[in-house]
Length: 434
Image 1 (cartoon, rainbow, N blue to C red):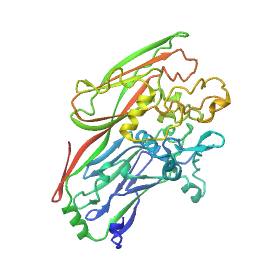
Image 2: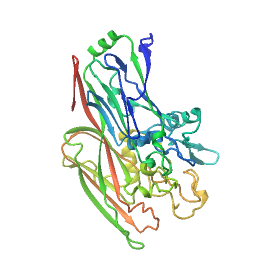
Image 3: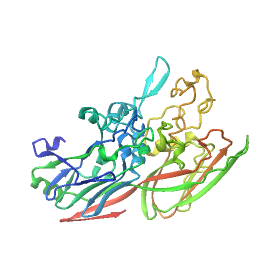
Image 4: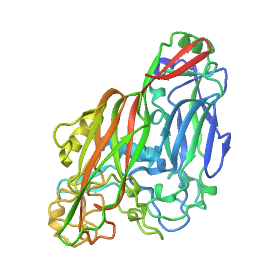
């Protein structure tokens, strides 16, 4: 922030105005101004016992189910199903960022370590949760943080937040109370002993500067993140050496009459216990945050009466990944992460160790659980939605694995960037969809 290098900023640390096992809320001071680079620090959990680790995909951000930014109760920006979106957002960082920055900020473990001499790759080390009885230094080393720009895109388009205009500003976090969304084993965490987070904000000390910036402030346009989902029914187990193809067509309603920039689809196993087993057993790969590759799946989106993709649509893993990269940019992906298998390797029977070279390491001489868990469907829309229909098909197979990865019911989570506008007039503001 070189623009404000003349001692006109003061770093403020705000304790919550309310906090319990379900909700934490912060309030900003009225009649002043803040830069938009606010952060929440001290996020995390304490393990009850054992050697529990944060979920690899999301880290400490698994604790945030929803987060809201309001002024006098009016929503400025908001993100629901936040932990699931954060898990995808983590993927979008480069491998270098994952290993040097992201893993330290939010304690996730998405980054890959490459051993060129052995032709092998490996995930970076997980961060183990501390117990509530550990020393302060040990506990603090396991806590993480959240940059509010990552969940409130409106802040990325505003140099400052004038609290004489946006009065009674509150940041409200709804905690995720299911520990399997946060840690790698389904252990019960003692939420009442979890750390209490702190809001860090840079406050302007010269109110004249704040008034000048507000006066010069034009309309603010940004893409907020909104969510909808559909259910894909379970496929009855076919007979031996048989398969069943099921087609599903459903409409999304949450994006109607809104300008949508782009979309990402995350495919969650609806039967969560198949990814996050109970009784302290280790989560399979990314657990509930896995976006599961399916057998012979096809995807198309019918926007305002017209198919977005020609022919069979996105009908191969390569097409889905390429479309996602076109819309959202490059992301961290190991060989096999977006496909149902890797060569002839299997997740249910022993395989030849040599086949793991250049891919994720084997687990007990079986295919790594994370193979097939980063199958995303991303695409541009760049239009106002009047009608949005999803056409999806997949093929169920005879499966001896109790997890039934290709037959289980799915929740397809759709996160869309939706265009909004904010206009300030005097001491009032108005927010509307574009």
